[in-house]
Length: 133
Image (tube, rainbow, N blue to C red; front, side, top):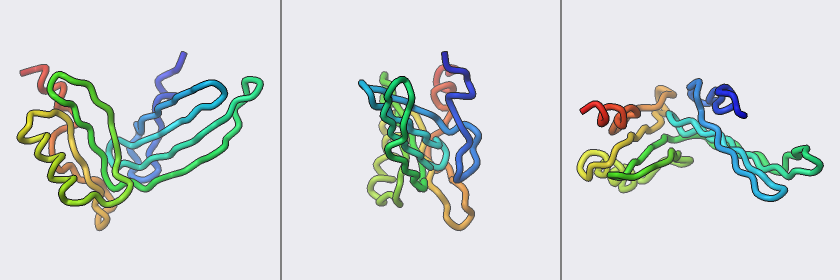
């Protein structure tokens, strides 16, 4: 059974305490992805397993240029990150989904001048606000 502290770790870019950890396993391979839902920093690791012992095969770390969560009306979602500066049409499309099309979630972009993420649209807590309305 996982403990709560095994489900997150501190972001190495913006310092957010709760970067999310996702783990997958298939046969004798597994992967671990840590992604900051605030700035988009991501760490990815692939393992192979022999005799119940993991062996690290590949590790990569990506600088975050922002993050987003999109929840379609009546649907479920996940978090994702930008690992390059997003094109304006991508940003505008996400903003339109959040402000015009009725999707819930948020969009942040990394501000290189201040070295901090900026909330561009939506709210990380919007799903809770919607439940209270």
